[in-house]
Image (cartoon, rainbow, N blue to C red; front, side, top):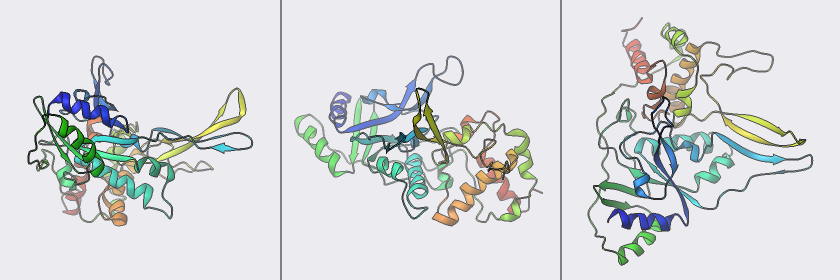
Length: 337
């Protein structure tokens, strides 16, 4: 179908869905005169950035950076209302697979699912954006997250033509109505997935406690500044802290917020009495790497990292997560002392 015809479908979808996709915010990049590609609401297909990777993932759709859990007074509390619309997110295979990791953390790691996450996750559907080539620092083929069947709609753009593969009965009904009234034609369409990244690594099968005291981690104690950008850009990092905010005009009223936190930031493991479990950046890097490539897999059966490479893209000290994993493999092979 043409771009105009697809935009008409988007207009109909917007009646029932909030639609988010990679968009370009001009002049909002890290450096002067640079743009920021990130997730935002769209109203037409031309708003979507297909040829660049977003700095941040789409996890904030179901895990907002700053989320009010409830408002309270002296006598009662009330949970904020939630938009009744569904949520359509344009996402690449690695990012869709990242939501499977978030599901494990928020829905499967305890006796009860997280209700705040669940109420948004149930609304979520994916529009698959194909990757016919890997972006800078991507290594999704090494983590096995370069393919997915979890999508409601596949979008492929070629010049001014839009090709769709519908994988959702609800969306099929809506789009079929448009098919009957326009000049659209049916074609055979199968998703294309990237099969090779420039960055490739062999993830060690065994990462055990013998690595805890290895001098490898001292490198990161001196290089890492503890800014936490790797965690905030990561589609699977999901730690948070709580804040009670009391209103200035009435200190007996306020709200409790859930706010993103980072295991790489000083004070993250500090407990009452001042004791801190991980004191150096090397120890924090060790925890992050071991959690993503060992502990998580022991519990859920797959690696937490999806190989999007965003942590490498945003690190101001050029610290490479896959290079760290490579070093661990070299240690296992007896190559690094």
